[in-house]
Length: 167
Image 1 (cartoon, rainbow, N blue to C red):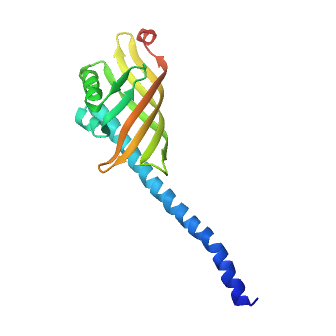
Image 2 (cartoon, helix red, strand yellow):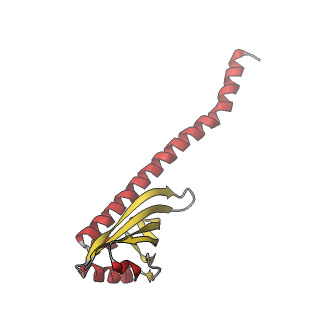
């Protein structure tokens, strides 16, 4: 076998690996971009809560969103979620919610992403500030209008700062 033939065969054998490596870099770059977008949308949602901006809060949700609250109660549909949050936004005791993503994974087979994180809710009570903390999982779906939240599950894990925690 000539030197030229050996080089040709070696390059043909190695080519699929380099193509796979290039594809993996492109995929991880794309996923990183998608993760960055979802993180920015989460920040937008947190800011809307801070500003008590109901319309801004609803922008990140699909109309058919399902939410299970930290207490275990369930709310279906964006209009119902926004109606329940509107009550909290009008309550001066409500100090806000913050959701902090710990990880975001973009599906390689569906237009979906999973956001895992922890959350904090704060309320002013007569005996102090009640702070509720927990974990959450959000399912994001990529649509023609960008990434939107399809469902969220919040689990309350601790409560401090008020006798209201035991109720």
